[in-house]
Image 1 (tube, rainbow, N blue to C red):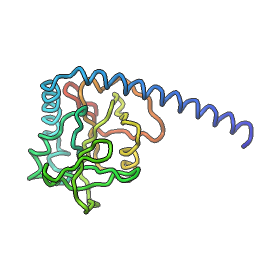
Image 2: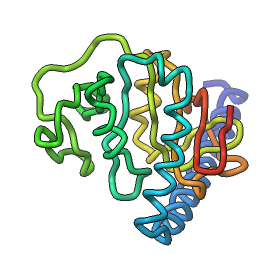
Image 3: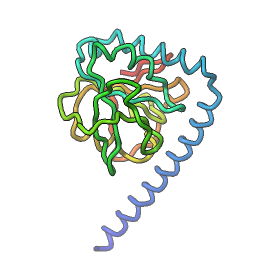
Image 4: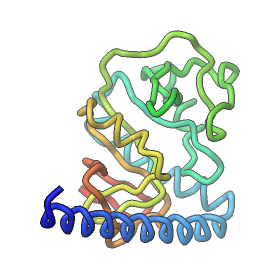
Length: 199
């Protein structure tokens, strides 16, 4: 490697380290803020978010929707999934290695808790068909439609090969003016919280 390339690589590595440090700090701060939310506040914010989503043409026209079965610290999705499972083809992520593998949601009786505490459909068949809409969790979002995840990169790798309309959802406290990003981070098409719609 020539001297100029070495300097560029050094600067790139320093920038990456700084970005990762900033991301860790944001994850810590958002985690603390979410802990302050009561169960009623969580449910009310989710109700407001999904009321907005249900009015969107992208939702109304979608036959297949890729969502997430919410963890305790995420915007709750259990009720919205149960509400629409008879009318929409609901798909949930499962984790295999460093990839998201998709499986159809059939019922709560068919969920099993696996990697990272995520509840996944207990099916052998994977879903490889069309996805009309993606509803995405995140640790934080910003007003430029950037998303900060948990740091594993599952969704960003998945987005490289799937161009369906993406809606990032979260609590009001998860929307920031700006978040640090790197070249692998993928933007949302729309971000919705209780008090904000970023498009």
